[in-house]
Length: 173
Image (cartoon, rainbow, N blue to C red; front, side, top):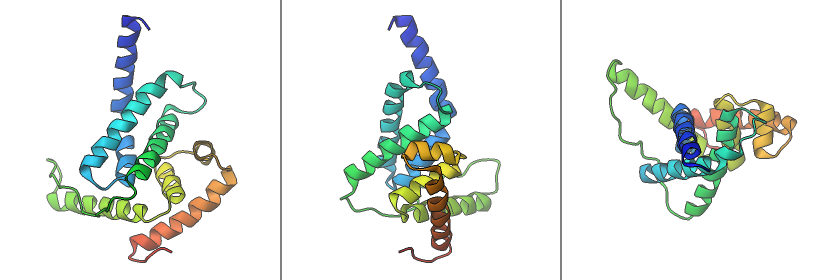
């Protein structure tokens, strides 16, 4: 790769990362509770994306491709840290200007409750729900996870029921 091509690649990567930063952050927070490890996982996903971007062949949307990379990296990360104790502490809260602090806190708490409930799902259920929440089609979810489209529908519906129960104070089996 020439120096000019390398600069263009870096520029494209930065634009893509900036455009999809929130999506990646949501995946990260659904897998990792510890702030420092969230940052580490985000960096791991960024590096994996940097390496994989050149191989993107437009067989799916860029968002789907990024989510596939993010979920695969997150699974590796979880496996790496699986034996360490975890907490469900709410990360430090920072007020954003322009919105009522009580509304911000309520939204942050709802998000926290969703993430806590997501972490109680099995890995497959968590993947299905987080991909669906990002608007990924059943077909693309099936491709990312290597399962049939019909199985995506069945498992996702069951995962949604479990998630709803968990969000309303129930315990999942």
